[in-house]
Length: 180
Ligand SMILES: [Fe+2]
Image (cartoon, rainbow, N blue to C red; front, top):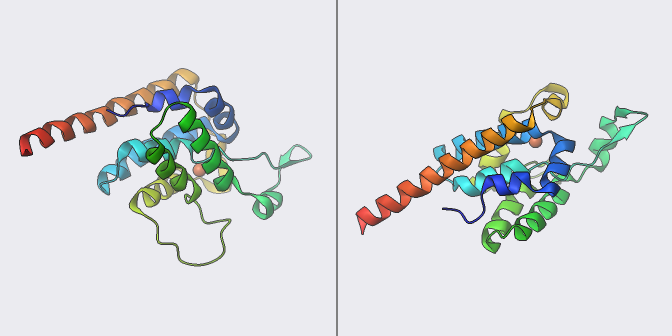
């Protein structure tokens, strides 16, 4: 079992503050997609779901005259960099293992290449899973950031993911014993 649950990360006031800005419903949906893709690509589901949950915590609000300004956003956005740093700080604060915190933060850093110079990045499977999960929940015009979800439903879906992640670990332990 992982030391730090998704619920602990999700309910932390810092997570809540930034997810309310970028979209709680999107973050929860991306975490669920990440769990599915993690199983498909044999990636650690604990790392994948945490990175997915936190992938957009670096967003800044690019409003001009009360409207979201996409030009300002495209020109100046560094949400993946900021998010990686915030995610790392938060994970360390809640007691995450340092290696896990680094892997998760780097997956947040690389979940989009929109701010990077053109070129081919060789993503690791964990990083690919988080990028794919984000794409899977994307809607035209950035509408995925505006989907709504009530607090209780969001928490229940996060808890359901924790139970599934725990189940995966429990099975790994059992098969580890049977193989030894
Ligand atoms: Fe996203």
